[in-house]
Length: 209
Image 1 (cartoon, rainbow, N blue to C red):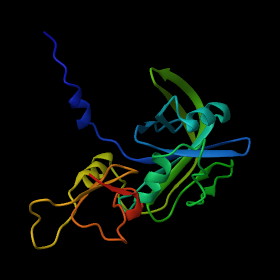
Image 2: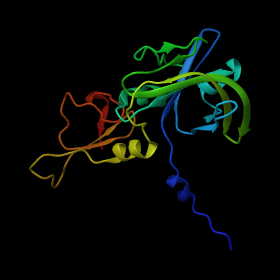
Image 3: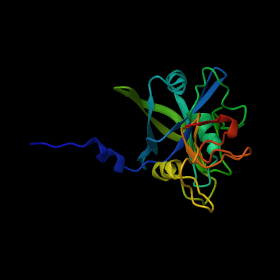
C-alpha cells in the first residue's frame, strides 16, 4: 500500500525572492519562493513558478521577461509585506521601495537586504494547475552582497517565534495582539511605537485577540 503525507513537502528548502517585470510602461513585482537554476551551460537558465491569478504573472506572459532579486538574511520585513501581501492591480508597490532598472528596462533590487539579482527573457513556459512555470535565459545579473540568502524556513521561524519578553514573566490575562497585515502575534502590552518584526507595519495595524 502506498503512503503519502503532504507535510513531507514542508521539508523541502526554498529561498525568498522579489520577482519583477515590465510591460508597456507597467511594472509590478511579487514575493516568490519557487525559484531555481536549471542549466549552467551552454546557456544559464532559471526556472520559477508563479500563481496564475497574480498580476505579475499576467505581465510576465505579456512581456516575456522578468528579473529575480534574491533576498538576504538582513531583509526588510516591510518589503516582504509590500510585495507579498497586496496586489499591484490596486497598489503601487514601488512607491515606498524605488527600484533600479536593467538595460532591458526591468525593475530590480540590490544593496541592503539583497545578495544578488538576475534578469532575462522567457524561453519556455508551462501551466501546471494553479501555477505557471517560467524558464528564463539569464542575460543580466550581479551578486551584490556576501550576506547569506534568506531561506523560507528562516522566515517562517522568525514569523512564528513568540515575541521576546522581559521580567516579570507573563501570567494570567496577558494581552495578545495580531498583526492585521501578516498575522504575527505579539504577547504583552503593545508599545505605541512598536513595529511588526515580519512585515514592518506600526502598532495601529494590530488588533487585540
